[in-house]
Length: 296
Image (cartoon, rainbow, N blue to C red; front, top):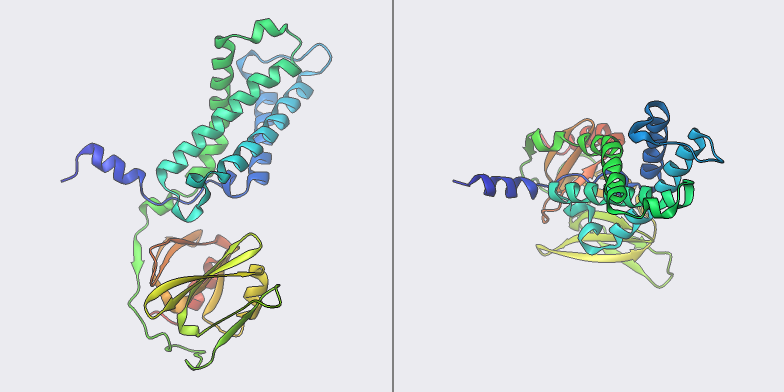
C-alpha cells in the first residue's frame, strides 16, 4: 500500500494538459495583462499610486502591459528548456512549477518596472522588503487568471478512461485495400513519404515539419517531412478514418485504444504508443461521430 508521500508523488506525475499561457503565450499573456490592469484599476490594491506625470490608470496600464511583455519572454524562454518543451509529457507537477515560475517573473517585472515608472527615489525601492512586496503582489493578482487556466482542465483528473477493443485495421466503412500506398509530398521536391493506411498511427505538427508515427512490423518509427499540418490534412482527406482532432494532430481512428474527458475535450491513447494526445473542444463532436463508426 502506498504511503501518503507515495500517493502525492504518483498524483504529481499524472498527465495534465498544459497551461493555456504556455500553449498560447501571446494571447495568454495578453489576457493576464488585461486582467491585471482591470483588477488594479478597479480595486487599487497594495497601496499602488500614480506617478507625478502619469494618472493612476496610465501608471497601471504601463505596469500591466510591460509586465505582459516580460511574462511572454519568460514563457518563450521556459518552453525552450527541454523539461518544459514537450506538451505531450506534461504533468500536474510541471503545471504547478510553471505557474510558480510565471508568477515569479511577474513579480520581478513589477519590482524592476518600479524603477522606471514610479517617481520615488531609486534608493527607496532598492531593498529586500520592496522586492518581496513585489513578488507577493504578483502572486496575489496573477494567481487568479493562472489558476483559472489550470483549473479548466481539472476534468482529466476525475473522468474515467474509456477503453476500446483492438479492431482489424481494414474493418469499418470507407476501408482502403491494404495494397494501396499513401504517398505524402513535401515542400522539398526531393522528399517524399510512403506508407500503407494500416501503418499510420498519427501525425504531429512541429513548426515547419510534420512528424509521422508509423507502425512498421509492430515497431513504431518516426518519419519527418517538411510541410504544414494543413497540407498533410488535405493529402490524407481521402481516407475517412484519418481525421484531424487538434490544431497539431491527425490520428488514425482505428488505432484509438482509449479516451478520457468529455465534450469539452478528450485525451486519447493510440495503439503502439503511450502518449496522450488531446482532442480539442472544437473537434470533440466530430471525433465522437467518426470514432463511433469504427468502435462499438
